[in-house]
Image (cartoon, rainbow, N blue to C red):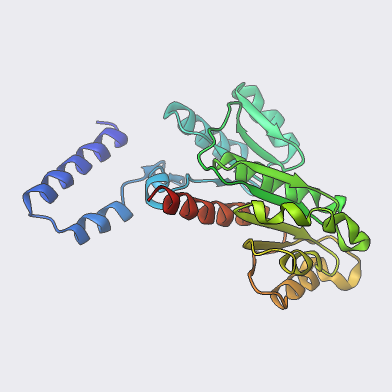
Length: 260
């Protein structure tokens, strides 16, 4: 019996126990939260995350070797699952492509996915803004991830405060989105400006872009954490993925509320 079939059988057993009253709803939910994963030794794929959290597992690829990545991709492919691997260098992708012809490399985002269209799951869109063109790699990580997770996504890059007219020209459309992701390095001022123009929830992403006193993004991070306008949440430095994940959870809740 394969791990997937075994897991399915266990789930059916728990459902029958729930129906018969031998298992409480609380016990059943606890079981679902710890549903079996795919045990591959030093790799344990969380295949039930989509059901548990509403979003699939995403793989951090930067410190994984080729053998690890090949095992993960091969397993996800055999199960018909989508895959998104972040922080993959181009030379690693070139080697992976020799084994898996159905991979796609989003070069600016450094993300690997399967070469297939992602289904849009939500009505409302997410907007990704970047302050400067130097922040584009982080912005693309957020953009590609948000699309992979089923969101309609729009992007506007190079709209930083050095030329304030660029972001002011977007003022009329800022309220049209479920969430806005704002990415900025240097002094990290753009999220505060955008938050002062809209009631839309905003997720700020500091980047490591800037001169010496920016301390590789620490200055921008502290500025964003001390933002005066309300409604600004902040993720870690260069964490475009984290912002997209959080934005999707917000969009997911909005969609559920509308359907309800």
